[in-house]
Image (tube, rainbow, N blue to C red; front, side, top):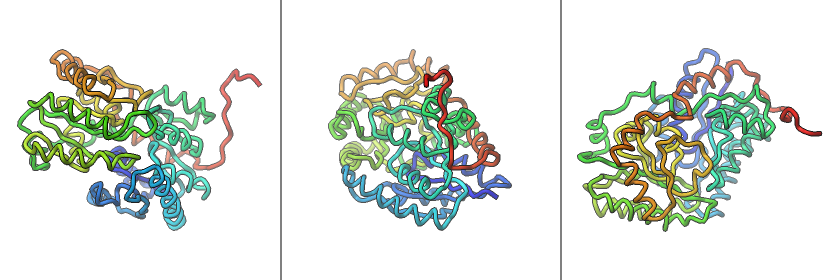
Amino acid sequence: MRRIAVFTGTRAEYGLLYWLMKDIQAHPTLELQVIAAAMHLSPEFGHTWQAIVDDGFPVDAKVEMLLSSDSRVGIAKSMGLGTIGLADALDRLAPDTLVILGDRFEALSAAQTALVMNIPIVHLHGGELTEGAYDDAIRHAITKMASLHGVAAEPYRQRVIQMGERPERVLNIGALGLDHLTRSPRMSRQALAKSLDFSLHAPYLLVTYHPVTLAEEAPVESFQALLAALDRWPDHQVILTYPNADNGGRAIIPFLEAYAAQQPERTLAIPSLGFQRYFSAVAEAAAVVGNSSSGLIEVPSFGVPTVNIGQRQSGRLAANSVLHCTADVEAIHAALQQALSADFQTACRHIHNPYGQGQAAEKIVEALATQPLKTFKHFYDLPGRPE
């Protein structure tokens, strides 16, 4: 039996990992270990570790690391706490490999701890670009610490190889979140409304806005511009999910809550939808608005328009259903006008998603069961590189 530890620090990342965790759990030669950390353990962000347990996964280690601060100093200190807690967790669990998805600061804590403890890392969603966030540098750093890679598209595979990773260790599996398209049951609009205790009686916009950690966009001002643009669409309801715990994320929450409180029949603010409600809400939405990676990766496969605001996702592959705009009122309003037009709504139903159509989990599980798990690796130079 190979012990496969899966690290998760946020609600969104767990939603992407769900089917991979189910397939590891069901595999005859793999043993699943779950490490939950950071936002999962915070009541402020919905205590989402409980959803992991409710889904049938034992949480083998909880790593408290998130300070009640989203300043640069607070985030850096949280990373240090994470390294300390993860060292104890990995020493106790002694996994044969650690699976890490993406690019967040808590993922970097997990990767650097595993690296010095000689635990092989399997990295998912490497090779991507998000030039408006320091996640971009974190993602590439984890790539260099990892020894096996599952990427979401061929251009990303080529980029990881360009970074010196051996081609046979870089697998183009597609985006993990798209496994929900074929494997997860969706709630009807009526069931979703009942679950949310919110009457979905009109077309609605599903909105998630995270702080931009490297670009010039100020989180509060940009979010206020988004809210002002939403005010121009009074006939559309709004579901607002909370931001993540990056620098400036907590500063957005009071504005989000106040906006919902002022118009409770039109707007719902919720810390976490969970992956089933989230994808069910996407399927029924008139458009998805904000700057979450999900708007670019998963949403196009539902035939739903995305309005991607600002620089956070700059550089990431995007389908033609994704409309990019700057973080100001007029630009957001113009993008919404196009997204909600009848012609664009129709066109989105026939969009090709560059991130695939699912079945990523089974490809990674096959690799976890059969590929050599090792930390040592040789740097791969591209053919024809001058000496």
